[in-house]
Image (cartoon, rainbow, N blue to C red):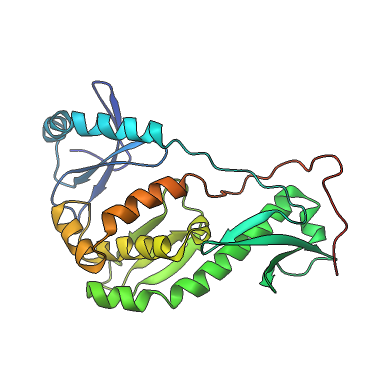
Length: 257
């Protein structure tokens, strides 16, 4: 039997196995970093996995070519006055302020304490922490209409770094509503794309995997889901993921009050 976390090498492909007792069918996915994931039921043996992967070798190759076309181009940001950061699709300029006040959006500027900005690691953490707080508060008020459309209960929400995934849904083994985790970086994107990620993960409350039944369900809630997925693939590769840039000579400025 396959085991969760196992790596399989089949021909030219290396696959990362994720086993779930809730799953009944095999499925493939290619993550943003190019990792090929084989999602399998707990009862799946090696022979069945090999037949499935070989039957879908063309699909994996097509996805790999698409990945190369949309290779990430994530920018770096210098923590100086005027640097642009996006929140829900709108651009806000950084404003350094005296001392160590909490990072916040105020009067159209993203305010960052000069004490944190002086150390790139501290400044990075302060801005990411703000995205996590702001994103959590925004998402909490956004779940209800999508949960209603999909006829599911609203899960708990957590916003944090998810690595190469924009969102994830984890069911509650005790029969609760489960937990949805969202990557903090998605809150840089336009609202329509954040809504798409939320609806995408809520659909997993009812159907695991990305088979035809899953896409039929999601399409009922968002008829344009395929177009939004393509837009997310394109815009998502250019969001800021926390890399800071050196301040160029003469590029800094005195913090404001």
